[in-house]
Image 1 (cartoon, each protein chain N blue to C red):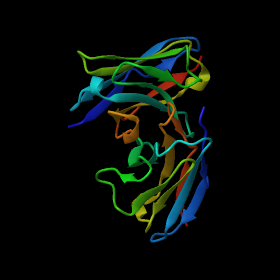
Image 2: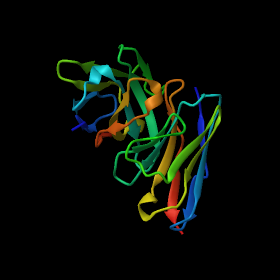
Image 3: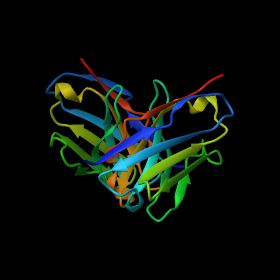
Length: 106
Length: 119
């Protein structure tokens, strides 16, 4: 099974900050990597698919990069509505989610 | 409008069975990859199962042999049959659409249905 490890598990940031979350796969997954945002009590929302493709309707301050085993989600300028938990997910071999990164207000 | 609506959750005793339903509107379930994902209270997301448009199915090791994913094309509905339920199966269960291949991610989600396994 492919394991997905996100770092950090949580972070505190201010509005306007640049935020970077990393995700590492236990083996190469090419670009079969997606990113989701989840707010409390809500279903997850797809932000980025295929490692770097922005899902329709998602603000351009979100971007993804990487291939193979190392991936990054970047929020270029954090907005109040971006405080949430973020998950990576691989779809190269069945599916696996990372453990999540909680973005909190500093 | 593209939408998924789950139902069938509830309180069930350990060892019991439950069938979750996920009714789709605005798209055809059988043309897409469809997944079930769960989230235990206060925990992260856990993928449970996927059914491909061709009918191939896969399961997480934690549910293999106990859960069965299926669909009814005439009702445009996805199902998850859960048998031999355990306390650790307690979670909110979401269904999600993945599009026509693995590259597109889970772009449409239901609101979730809660399963509580307890005596």
